[in-house]
Image 1 (cartoon, rainbow, N blue to C red):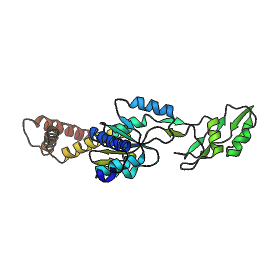
Image 2: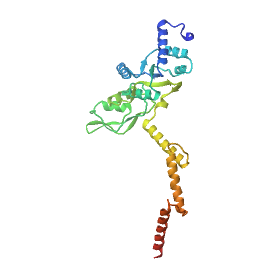
Image 3: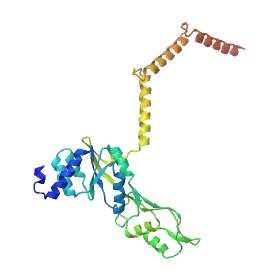
Length: 282
C-alpha cells in the first residue's frame, strides 16, 4: 500500500483507508455513475438505500489509489472508473443490487447534449396547445405540426431522435413542452466485484420471469429425457418403472402372452377384433 499512498496528504490517506476498509467489510464492491442526478434525487436515493447498501462518493484518483494498493483481482475495478463514478458496498449479490438500482431510475426531461438512450417517438394526434407560435417551434425542430379543429396536432408518428443521437436544444425544448421524458436518471451500475469476479450490467439485466420459465422448461425436458433413456435417479425411478411396466403389458397383449395380469386385456382385445371382423362380413 505504501507504494501508492506514501506521498498522500493525511486526509487523502484516510479516505483511501476508508475505501479499502469498506471493501473488506462487504461482500460486494461496485461502481455507480452519478452523472446527471439532481441533488434532491440523490438524497432520496441515499435514503432509500439506507440499511441495504453504502454509497460513498470520492475522487476518482483516490478510488484508483485504493484499489491499486489492494492488488489483483479487485484492482480491475479501476478500468471501469469513468466520469462521475461513486462507490457502492453491499452484502447483496450482483443481481439483487442491479435490481435495486434499477428501481431508483426515474424518467427526466432531456437537456441539450443528452444522448437518446433509445428511439424517441412522438405519436400522431392532437396536443394540448392552442394555435400560435408553438406550431413554428415544432416545425423548426422537425415535427410535422399543423392546426386542425382549433388545436395544434402532430400529423404523423415520427421518430424524433434516434437512439444514440445527441439531443439538440430545439429538440429538448419540444420534448419538454410535450412532457416527453426520455432520459433515465438514477444510480447506474458500472461494475460489481463479487466473489472474485466482475459483473457488468449487460450480464445482470435479465428478465427474471423468462429466466425462471426457462429453468422450469429445462428441468421438464431433462426429466423427460432421463425417463426416456431409463436413467435412474430418485426423481425418475418411479416413472421409469411405470413406463416399463406399461410397455411390457402392451407387448404381452400384442404377443398374446397369457399371464394373470394381462389375460383379461388379451381376451378383451380378441373380443373387439372378433366384433370388427363380424361387422365386416355381414
